[in-house]
Length: 266
Ligand code: B12
Image 1 (cartoon, rainbow, N blue to C red):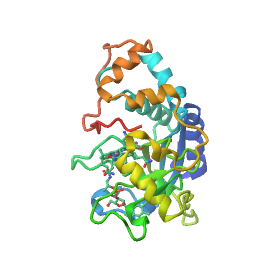
Image 2 (image 1 turned 90 degrees about the vertical axis):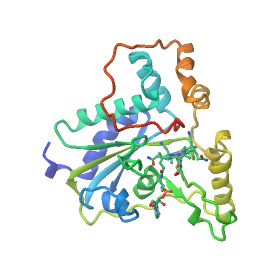
Image 3 (image 1 turned 60 degrees about the vertical axis):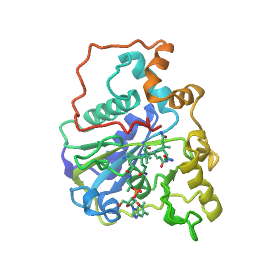
Image 4 (image 1 turned 60 degrees about the horizontal axis):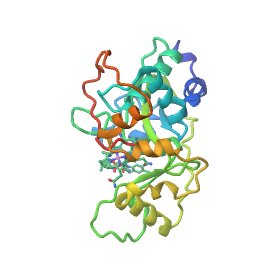
């Protein structure tokens, strides 16, 4: 497909058509919006007017993509099963929608040789307008003294019941200057609610209360909650109890530079 004929709407729409059926959302952004916030070591190396798409998983991904993936492929005790599934869905969608086109795919769990993340998922989600990234600096008169508080994105429809999975960079699709950067909905507007959100995310993330900071339209099913509440090392045993049998007859994954964060980000 010739790059010159592609508009942001056509690229986003094509991928969305494939991935929305599997419980993913796709949001476009201009690389420059992302790069302008980051130090050189974390910036993307393509031109600032290039198109990128950030891919989020919604609560439906578990039933619409993950369980069918496990059914079809069995569980493979190599890398995290959710990561394998997301990679499979995104890679297949990209080769189906953009055959022969060069697309730089980056997943949330991948690291650069410098051990830094291949992309900052929350910054990308914020600049695309998909989910507001609440950071320590968004709280005036902070109550935490010198302590570092990790920031968290809140989706206007799913609250914290989603994850940011991938960034697709189209170095040969150039966006015009008329494309305006969207502002993500500020659904946690007060100082008190932001403090509550950041404290829940940093001090009690295991109870998942941070996910309900806004009333979500959909949350994770009981099965999905059981899955993510299980420590990553025991998830293979859990999925076996659901009837998914292990398969060892596969080729190992080819991305040797990838590494799980060990937390099993859900
Ligand atoms: C490393 C990592 C961790 C580490 C360190 C956390 C951290 N934030 O540094 C640990 C292991 C502790 C961790 C834990 C968790 N994590 Co984690 N983690 C990551 C990971 C892989 C990279 C984050 C990172 O290193 N950032 C680097 C730091 C320096 O970035 P930063 O603080 O945002 O700073 C940048 C911005 O401020 C930017 N910037 C500057 N100015 C401005 C201005 C604006 C407007 C903006 C937008 C940006 C911006 O510049 C800075 C860099 O120079 C991301 C996935 C990814 N690839 O991004 C998931 C991720 C952040 N984790 C996530 C989650 C859910 C968790 C857990 C709840 C675990 C879980 N299983 O669910 C816990 C919660 C935290 C806790 N209490 O422990 C989710 C968060 C989703 C969300 N809604 O925001 C992510 C995005 C993964 C995902 N797939 O969705 N995590």
